Image (cartoon, rainbow, N blue to C red; front, side, top):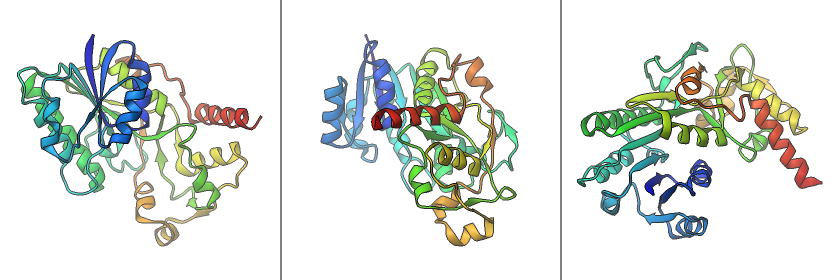
Length: 296
């Protein structure tokens, strides 16, 4: 049985684990004891370590045949020091993993003014957050080329699930941009992202990037409207971009400055992934079905 190391222990990691447990010996890198207990109870082997503490990662050397890297970069700086620390630990031993799959973000493309793009689009990060993702991608590509480890990059947009819809935002009555100022957004259901990670283990090419997005073609306000309708909530009021700058937080506005329409042909043709939730409507319908089941 092969060893697989999951780095990053959030929701998508747990969804991946549920599909891996019967085929791999799964190690999970966790930062605290309570999270370690959760993974141990699920059947994984937790490793208590911290990506911000390079010395704590020594036990990773020579451990895994495959690495799934889902951990985000640190919250500040220009470099992803966490990825750099991870690669330093993995590279110390005589036995390297044969494959590493990294979940990045479509934010690396920056603002594309609503254009339809694919993986051939050059990265152009416009936020420090996206810049750290580009740094991680570049480090991973270089490391893969130097070591011969098959490194693949999955670029994910806004991740949603039944419990990850903007319901609370709608309840607060926060505004959305008027149509003339609005941006195109991209989405992927957490289950489909987990499935893409597994598909990458089988089919992804070395030093190859894949956009993991669904088939939706929506502006952000339209997305909010569809969730509002499904959950019987008021649709968000529309305001101009100038009004939004004065009303919304810098973090909220950061997602309203970049407009992209991202294609997923490579995901389907090369990773051979059939999306369980090809449109945002499919995911919203599933969330409503769950809600109704709980209420009945």
